Image (cartoon, rainbow, N blue to C red; front, side):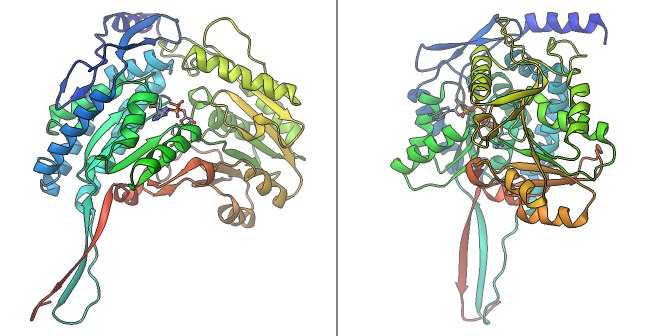
Length: 503
Ligand code: NAD
C-alpha cells in the first residue's frame, strides 16, 4: 500500500464532520441534556468529537416517535414487496457510503481500515440483503381442521424494538440488530455503544434517504447506565435486543424483569475454543488459521477462538508453528491500508486487558508465545499465548476480549470436549480433525451456538448468515440470523375462523 492513500485517509479523517447527537423522527436533534462524552481515537489518543451523553428525555422522545410510526402503519403495514425493495436499497446505500462508514469505525475503535472496509462493503450489506430477501418469506402456517374452520398463524411485528449494541463491530452490529427488526415490520430505537456511535447514526441517515419513513429507525446516543437502562425499563418497549457483555446482559434481565413482562434477546460474551486433534496434516497452515481465528479485530470478537485445546502429541509442533505466526501480528496504524492488526479500542479497555493478563499470570500461567503487555501509554498490544497451570485460572475461564489466547493440552477425546465445555459460555467452537467419528461427537457434545469442524484450513465462506443459531450458557439466548432470526422479532398469533361453510 502506498503512503499516498494513508495520507489521503488522514486528510479525510481530519475532514470528518462529526454529528453525534440523537437521530429521532428522521432528523438529528439536540439531546435533552447538556452532558457530553468525548470520543477518542485510540490510535492517537486524540479527541475526535463530543458525543451527546443522552438522557431519559431523549429515550422518551424516541419511544414516542417509534410508537407513533408503528401505530400509524407507515412501515408496519406496507406490503412485503415494498418493504423488501426499501431494505435492498438500504443494503445498496451501505455499499455506496462504505468508505465513509469504514473510516468512522476505524477512527472510533482503532479497527484496521482494510477490515472496516470489508465489513462495510461485504459483511454489513450481505446481512442487510439477507434480511431484505426474507420479507416476503415470513409465512405463517395453516392448521389441519374440520370443514368450515380455517385455523392459521399470523406472524406479526412485535411493535417497538429497543436494540443495544457494543463497540467491537460498530456498523455490522448495528445492522445485525436493526435490519431483522425492520424486516419484520417493527419500529426501532438503537442505542450504540458510547465508544462507537458514528456509523450507527450514518446508518439511520442512509435508511431515511432510501425510504424508511421518519420515526421507524431512531438512534439515541449515550451511556449504558442512563440511556441503555432507560430503554430496558421502558414499559412501551415491546422487545429488547441486546448484544454486549454477559455482565450487562445479566443486568438487563434484572432491570427488564423488575419492570415489565416482555421478551428479550441476549447475545453476550464468549470464550470459544479451537480444539486441535493430532490427525491434522498441515500444522503450519492450521497454526495460521488458529491465530487468525483468535486475533481478528485484535481478539475483540465475541466468537474469537481464544482457548486453544491441543492434543499433547501435536502440542509442541503446533506451538512452534504458532510462535512463528504470531510475530506477524504487529499493532499498526489503523489508517494504513496495509495494517492487518490494529490497536485496542480504548485506553481503559487496554488497562482492563493488561490487568486480566497480570491476574492470570500471578495465578499461575506460563507465556508460551508472543509477549506480555508492555505499556507504552497507548492502546497497542501485541498478541500472546499463555498456558495456565490450573483449570480455575481466570485466563482460562473468563472472557478477556483482547489478543490473549489460553492454551491447554489433552490426551483423550472426552477430555478435549470436557475442556471445550469448561467455560460457562457457549457461542462458538472449531474442531480440527480428519476423523469423522470425532466430528460427529463434537457436533453433538460441544455446547455452542456454532460448531465448525475443519479438516482443512480453507477460506470457503460456508452458510454465512443464512442459518439460525442461538447462543448457549452465559453467552445468551434467542435466535439471531437465518429466517428464524427475523422471526425472533415477531409474535405468533393463532387465528381461527369458524363459519357455516368454507375452507
Ligand atoms: P458492554 O456490555 O459493556 O456494552 C454493550 C452495550 O450495552 C453498550 O451499548 C453499552 O452502553 C450498553 N450498556 C452498558 N451498561 C448498560 C446498562 N446498565 N444498561 C443498559 N445498557 C448498558 O459490552 P461492550 O464492551 O460494548 O462489548 C464487548 C462485549 O460484547 C463482549 O463481551 C463481547 O463478547 C460482546 N459481544 C457479543 C456478541 C455476540 O454476538 N454474542 C457480538 C459482539 C460483542
